[in-house]
Length: 208
Image (cartoon, rainbow, N blue to C red; front, top):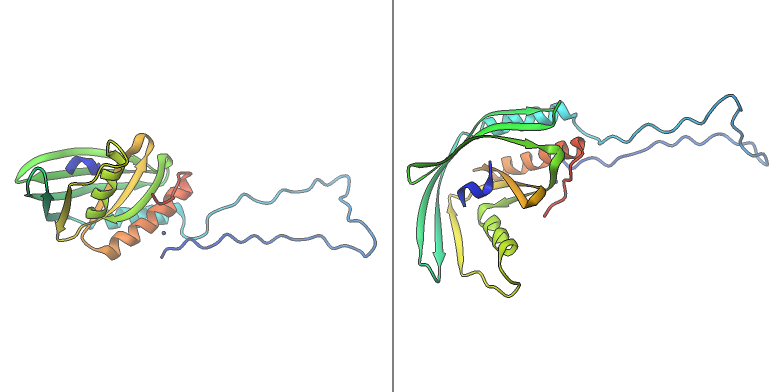
C-alpha cells in the first residue's frame, strides 16, 4: 500500500550460457556454408521460477497477512513525544503475470478512524528499486531524502511495537508502495520473489 499514507535467499541463480564452438581442423579456418547463415544465440532469460509461479507466490503471501495492529511511539525533541495506534489490512490481492501488475485493496485506521481505504495498482514494469526494511529504518530513510539541507539533523525518532517489516518499492517521481509484515522471514521471502518478478517484467530490482 502507499507507504506515506500512514506516515535479494531466492538468490537468482546465475545465468549460464553454453557456447558451442565449431570444430576446427588444424591449420584450416572455419567456414560457414554460403547457403547457411549463422544462427544467433537465444535471448537471455532469468533463471529460477517462472513469472506465473512467482506472482502466484506473491499473491498467496500478501493475502495471508491479514490485519496488522501496531503502536508507533514518536520521540520528538521539539514537538514532544506521542503515541499512535494503527491497524492495517491488505486484501483482494491479485498478482497478474499477463500485465505484470499487483492489484489490491489497502485499508488503514488510526486511533479507530479510517485514514486510507482505496484500491491500488502496482505496475512492476515501472519499479526502479526495492528494499526490505523495518518501519523504523524506513522513517529514517524518508527523513534523509526529504530534509531541507545536508546539515539538517533529525530531531525525532520512531519506535514501532511490535516491529513491522516492510517491502518498500520505489517508482518514478520518488513514489513508493509498501507491503507490511509482522514476520521478518515472510518479508524477506516476498522481497526476493518481488525482485525476481520485477526483473522478469523489465523493471529495476536494485536496492536503495
